[in-house]
Image (cartoon, rainbow, N blue to C red):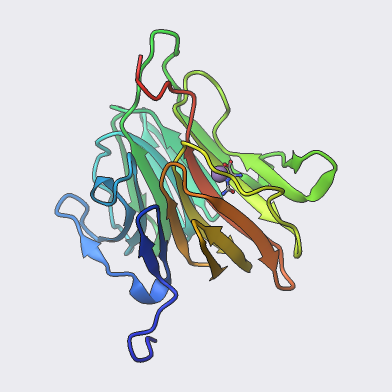
Length: 246
Ligand code: UGY
Ligand code: MN
């Protein structure tokens, strides 16, 4: 509920913090039974799109115009691909290479985080393959040597075929990024659990589960987890491509 025009949401030249009180849903003609919150898109300056798709039972996603990554937040979806049907429930994810015919249909009322990006082919990259997984089965690596309070689960392998990464980062209460990062890569970030303080540019924001953040290239960034529960976020990052193209 908004109070007298106040919100934690903030749009600055190098970042967007979008909190659920400011989400506006939109339908797309090609996706009956699905509503979208479009968090990041070229209109914002991003080179990818990220949205939350909210499915009514039997709601169906439009075909992807690009590579598609999907992470189930809630409910049950059926991914049909190559005459196989995959049941995806909370924590399951799929990476679908560009130009791969498939359908995604909701069995029950569901929500999913969806990231789409045009594929950047290089002469040294092999074609990426379909990936289907469950975040519960992805081993967590220690993100910073000597600090097991900050862990990272790579949902897409770091391999030349891929031009983006999606990771889940988990911070025990009190854990923090060891440095302020400033890098060319963009981020789309969805807070899955917990809370903390995000530094974006020269601003420090309280953030919590449900919030979305877009970080433009070179946006100074830092996070520290607060509260009694571990903080967890799903984070997109472009990777492995020369800034000038090949
Ligand atoms: O991979 C990353 O760049 C990550 N450490 N950034 C972040 O969490 N803001
Ligand atoms: Mn980063």
